[in-house]
Length: 142
Image (cartoon, rainbow, N blue to C red; front, side, top):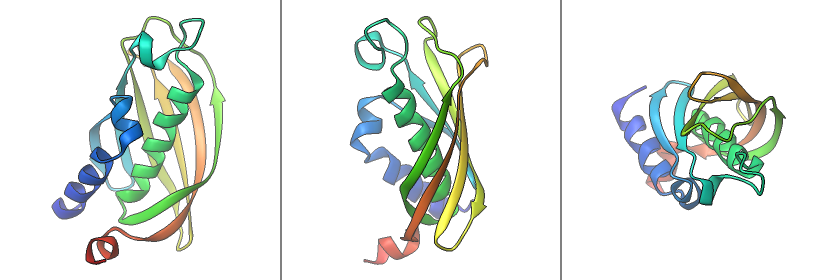
């Protein structure tokens, strides 16, 4: 992944209000793959029972899969996401999400994601499809 694209992807992600509100950060960017970390704060990320809220998981899943698409230079919007909640946690201080592109099409991209706790235990497995809206480079020229 070239330096210019990496810088633009980081800039675009850092301007996302929802991801910022949940304190999600990028820990690794590569061509077609991204790793993000989301700290778990009870007042923000959990449900009534003290477990991580499905909406928090959903935001992290959409973020890692969408940004994985950005790493290959494509602007996308979500078409669909299928999530499987495998397990949950009340005690992990953070979760890590990994998203990767598994099909880099002209009009549609297909991705997958996993979220794991601090002990590497699988919490969520997901797949998503994203409509291609253009390229990152084209968006910088507009």
